Image (tube, rainbow, N blue to C red; front, side, top):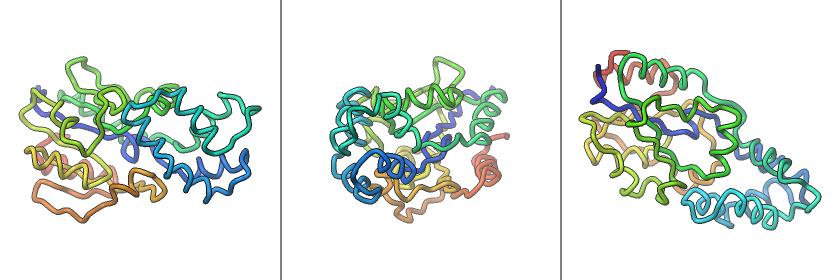
Amino acid sequence: MYSKTLILFDIGGVLVKLNYGNFYEQAAKYSSHSAKEIEKKYIQSRLDFRVCRGEITALEFMNELRDCLEIPKKVTQEELERIVGATFPDQISEMIALKEQLHQIGYAVGILSNIGEHVHKILLKRYPEIFAVYNPMCPSLLSYQVKVMKPEPRIYDAVVGFENIIFIDDKDAYLKVGIQRGWKGIHYVEYPDTTEPQRKSHSDTGYQHPWLKSAKSIREVKNSLREFGVKV
């Protein structure tokens, strides 16, 4: 019915809550380093970016993480996955429900996210509905699979075949690139994580544009969608 309109969803901070601080604190229980030291080591290692770009696999990430944080060999891979999984305390159920509602109404929905293979596997086990786009013709662009990350233009250029694109993300720098291509953007900021490595590299800039709306709640997201002509 409205399938020429695509609503794109980011994952971290939009469909799932992020708290890297939880991960650092959990890792500190198995390491001689403090949570603050672990945060510094993790950011300096650039493991987060390398795995999100698909330069290393989930297994390589876990092995390098163990070495980087000096986590003993006696800690199993399953325990290591649980430590990393502390980054994702809960799904954002209302946003996932909104994604499904938009599909049911007849809109195309998709995913555009900077994400590593290890996180994809963790979230698929816990919250599989995050990744549902309901139609194989709808885009599901995960950075580790396409080997490019937001805000690099190539990942945006992979979204084709739609007359109207609305992108929901928690970082305005990522929305800006879409808006420059004629997209509309909703800057969803209900659950910001100041400890997220990618936020430290791409913090919010205060970017403003007539096609950019800010939303601090799901209600405000829906209001923004209505302002962009979406019947939700």
